[in-house]
Length: 163
Image (cartoon, rainbow, N blue to C red; front, side, top):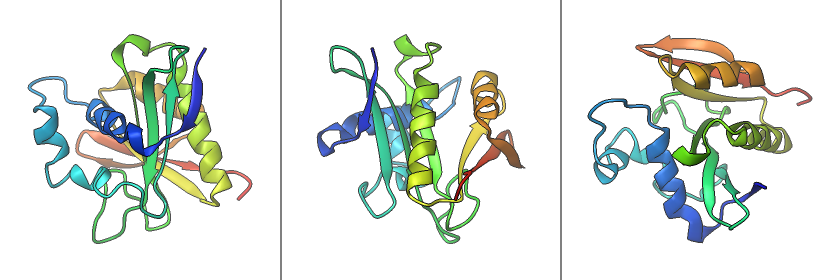
């Protein structure tokens, strides 16, 4: 059984691990510390806990974290890869390799979509490498739509219903 819960301060290292996992680089992926502390990536985790930062962790029956989903707001002068506007948080998601393909990512996505709705956001966005076909398929199935193609990545948007 999987439980979805709010991230706690003691779990921020796991959240950073999942940020690294979420970066789709198939060959010659830089070491974790180098990649997550690069100028274009550290904006996703630096100072975590600011207003608008939201994250959930999936834990298994042994209370081990197996996946995470999160979102953060960016602005015009500090855009993320999936930036749409100042009022649309950009989300990221990752799972540990051993639990991929078991529906846990979908559970996490549904939880973060519900949270976005609860927080009053009209939309949420993400950036996905088009070679990551399985992820693209899942996002579309959940209701994300293509927004903008940038290089080999698609920015996708989910328009929150009921807001």
